[in-house]
Image 1: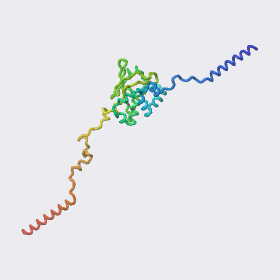
Image 2: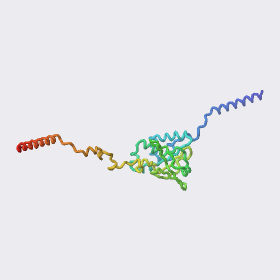
Image 3: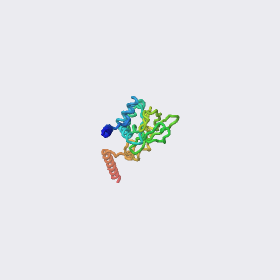
Length: 247
């Protein structure tokens, strides 16, 4: 009888303990979702302009969604405020809203790249920027002696130590804004055609008027035509009068 009572007590204790364990909530994941804005804000106050553009273009939200749902991860190159302030005057104001989106997407790679990866990556590296005609914008990387440079074709700068280096998101500091070559005057598509005589369409003058019509003499005014008819009639009458006298 005593043994049965002890066994019942032990069983009750075990059941209570199991109930407590099952009632406990699962422990939260240690890191939580990755947030590009939090990474930049934690790095100091040197990225306010880039944060603003990530917000207004919605590229920051796209990065957060993709980096937390994709197995490839992402890489972001973050220009400092000084990098934006050192752009030629009026550069950003000349860009359309679509070009501003492309500019920020041009600083994002759709894959996680460690610093070591960037030293040996195959060029050009595709970015998140895609033109309206399906054109892709790429970056070129060169690495030597633990230094990595990145070039857009129009701008080249050094890639500095990462603000974040753990997968799935790598964030690197830049001291220059990576302007795509397509956005500069050096790109053929950005150059306006030069005007010349040979470029004027056939039959058109430089002012856009019909050149053939311009060469034709303008008709005489109605008054001048009537005066000419009267003069011819008078001459004819005189000639006929003189011929009558001679006969």
